[in-house]
Length: 505
Image 1 (cartoon, helix red, strand yellow):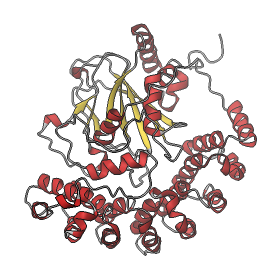
Image 2 (tube, helix red, strand yellow):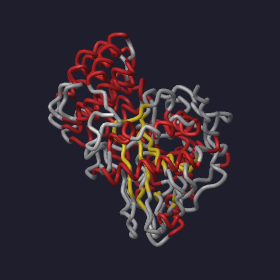
Image 3 (tube, helix red, strand yellow):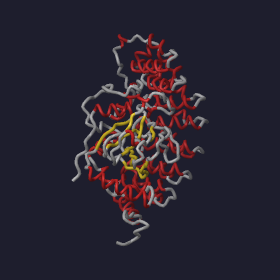
Image 4 (tube, helix red, strand yellow):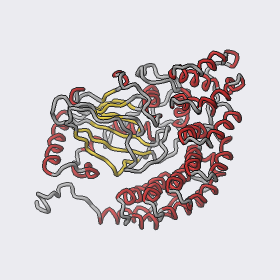
């Protein structure tokens, strides 16, 4: 009998939202990890890296992901029914040099990265991993940045997942990370698994006690103030739609001018703080003249300033939305993208303008608008007809962004399912595998797509096949389960069959 998941606390969730990672530990025994290491050494030495077959090849790893600390952490961040992705990898680090900072790709494909936690990774260390053995390093708070906006000369900015065997890092998928230097020259494994949310958050899925956002009591000093973003993410995870209009202080306490002046300061860190403070005051700051200033800050050279300005404008009503919609049309792609993040938090007042932007002749604007509409979920239902039309667009990024938006919106579901059935036959691989992946979020109401999903089980791409199988699982009707069982019976993978032992004993 499996133990109940050990859900994260409010404080742990706040830290995850702000820093983008948590370091946790299972209590599996030393003997368990010693056996796991012996198996890893044998497989890597005799067969090489098992890649996506890591889990069936080394069956004990499944016990790791059934541990209540891990199931509780994933349920807290991704909700119940989260999906274990078909891509997984065993990372072996023997290099005395640190790896390069990077964000993981979507298997070679690109998409607009999420600020809300739709995806997460577990990086599990099956051996004692002191700092000298080269654990994974992460940059706290960097999950919100497309650019590397940190100081390389500031060693305190990096956090490492060092610890005893059983230590793991739960990280937001889009955080900047790297392998650190292995100075001991000993085996160092890190087992990386990816997970996705399959349910739109309707209520907190962690051990939730406090209703409102509170800044974490302890943050890495390198983390910049992004409370306008953190509050939005907290509310999103709590199932709340629309902008958070609760001012950080009472309107009588708002004295915007010093912060408006600071927004012009030469020090970018002071500009970040100013944009954050003005955004937290919301409409009260808007009435004090902050909207034009934050609109100009959307063009700031420093990405953290732009982000705070965008999320701040989302809290400032019609004027803020108007400024964001204007910036969505900006000639610079980065500024348009930043405005889309703000619009994704602006509520139903942004839907009409975003729907109109779908008709842009510039592909990136259509992508950004579709992304924002998807994040607005059912509020964006009026835009569904316009989104469906874009499934015939010549741009692949437009089409696969639209697919995800339609699944997030979810209603009217019959029209959406009919459109997604066509998308399962798209000429582009990423459109097809994004369609299968996203259909998983629709559950039993997507049953009419079962024939197309069965056909997708024969696709040439491994992830199209995997996502189609997962979609059948999450649809969960008898028709879907029968098709899935037939596929799995035919493709059953034997963990003890190797080149050295092909069939006996």
